[in-house]
Length: 361
Image (cartoon, rainbow, N blue to C red; front, side, top):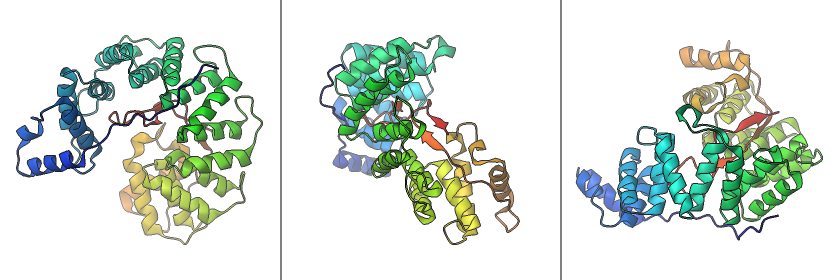
C-alpha cells in the first residue's frame, strides 16, 4: 500500500483571551472592533471562536466575514474555512463553484484539508446542478494524496471508496489496512466503519457481531453519535453482546444528547412504553419534539422510525403525549458512515458525517 505519513489532526488553535475580548466588544456594541483585528491569524482565530460558539456567543455571519478578510490577506486556512462556508451556505449564500475554485487553488498549494474537501465534492456529485460533474476517479486520487500526507479523514474516505470499488478497482484488503492506520491515529470514523463492515460481512470480512460491537463501543467512547447509536442497538437486540435494555437506553441518551434524531426517537419510545426503563411520558414527549426539530438531519424524513412512530410524533407535536398515543416501533439497524466530512469548516481535520451517509440494515 502507499506509504502513509504519521497522521496529524491539524486542528486550529483557539484563543480564549481573544474570544473574551470579542465578547467585551460585542457587549459595548462595538462591531467595528470585532472586524478590526490586526493580523490575518487573529481574524482566523476569532472566526473560529465565533463559528464554534466557544467562549463567545456564536455568530456565523461575522465568522464568515472574518474568514473572508483573512483569506483576502493570504491566510490559507482562513481561505479553506471561507471556501467551506461558501460550499455549505454557512453564514452566507451558497456558492459551490467559487468554493471548488478555492479548494483547487489551496490543494495545488499543498493544503491537505482542501484536497479532502474537493474530493468530497467530486465523489458526492453535489455540484452537478451547477456544472461540476461527479468524478469518483479524481476524488479517490485526491483522498489518497491527502491521506499519504497524513490527513486522517482522507484515509477513511479513501478506504471507503476502495471498499466500494468507486474511482477504481474494488480493493477490500487494502481498504481494511487503511482503516487500521486511521484507527491507530484515533479516528472514531474508522472504528465505526470497520464495525459496520463486520456487521454486514463487507470488505471480505466474515460476519462478526462481537467484533462489530467491540469496535462500535470504542468509537462510542470517543463521543461519536452514530457509534453510540449502534452500541445502543447492539444492547437492544443482543447482537454481539448480551441484551441489556437499560444500557441500550443509556447509549441512546448519549447519542441523542449529541443531536442524533434517531437516538432521540428510540429513547422516547423506550420511555413511552417502559422498555427497559420506567415509563416517563412527559420526557418522551420532549424527546419526540426535539427529534422533530432536528427532522432535517434524517434521511427521508422520519420514516426510519416506522409509520406508527411517525403518527405518534405528529400527534405529540399537535396535542401532547397521552395514554392514547400510538406505540411506534423502535428503529433498529446499523447506521453506517461512508465518507468523513468537516461539517464545521473551522475544525480542520476533525471529521464528522457527510451527506453521503446511509443507513444500512
